[in-house]
Length: 538
Image (cartoon, rainbow, N blue to C red; front, side):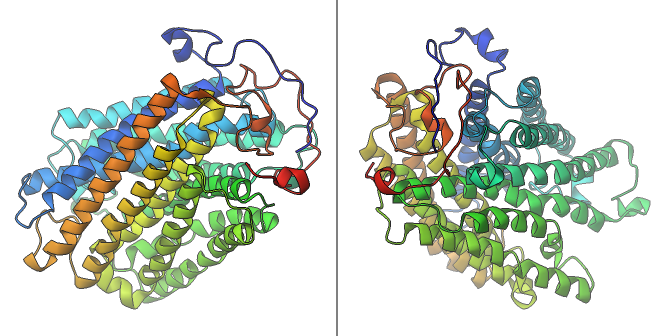
């Protein structure tokens, strides 16, 4: 991008005002993003511990670590924490908050007070949900299916209300981002010159605004069902428990793309920078973002093929689900086309981006098996679903997050991490993820049901391989934690633009000034115009 930008001098946003109170009261989008990041990574640690306990329990048949009832609570908390507290807000709320205004050439988001409020709403909802840990626990699974969730003796109401409250955080963030993108773009930044990460956040925000209220109302109704017995989902009172599934998945399938679209946006930033080439198919990627968002609203029924839907409804949902592959395939081919004959630089962000493309492609291809009625009946509620779910939502979103974290870390910390351990960690996490979850596809095809604390002896070997893979992932994350903390404390000072990227956030100092830019930047070129001298090595 061409800029001619006069930059602010003096204190950066980290040192602008010191002390804990200044952080807790801040309206600076960068600080709010960092607070989100700290909170999300803390919950990720807790959810990861639950995951490790699940895998340890499944190392050998016989439910050797915890009782079956405690195992039910383990996978419930693992799922609920990872979905509602980690993966959904991970890229939009944390990285999006730090990056979006700077990529727009703005001083902040449109509504800074809303932004801070959304963070505290998120924390409040998470605190309410986690309070159940100290009461009777929750054993419903993260989907809270009725009628069990309205009859269990555990503290399901606390988690339902917690997720209900956290939904408002998503809505506030989505509204803030949509208005910011419409109103705060730098002069010269038309829609055709907007970075693809902003397109991804825009599409994600639209889904958050439209779909989250449906989930919020559904969870509130389930909580009221338990508290006062209103009879909407309770068959004993004339309600329909399958109606809960329709409401839940009408939100939760679009929620898959709340998790994955921002990760796709990160990959669309990382791949051209480390390929030193213009993005292949800019318009196609931008339009595919909205194609995915649109289709995501009309395929929720593929989660319910064995719940008693009519044959025609099953056929219709199966057919529509197949169309998701089209806009998704457009993105994958565009990334590969960008890398083709590019000058590839295999730094840590690029390793995570390549891992994302590999993992997400497997997740998407295995989704076709579950979208096909004949195979879904066999594979429903087996470990094939667990593997597919993790390849798409966890592997895809998490690898996209790690790519973004490493890509923008020098900008917001002002420090460079050590490249060698970063590359080793990327390899460990990518290898560990596939070792953990690929055997679960085989287990599912063989018929091992999910959510069971025990299993038949013939499944032992694959379960042990899967558990060993989880140890490799854990080792990779511990290494990431070590070198990023080391970089913050003792790392070398980062240059303003270590990757020689062209988007606006790299045109300000590292770390950025409090209001990003003293003089409003003017955009004259596209965000991926890597030609001539701009396409030189990093």
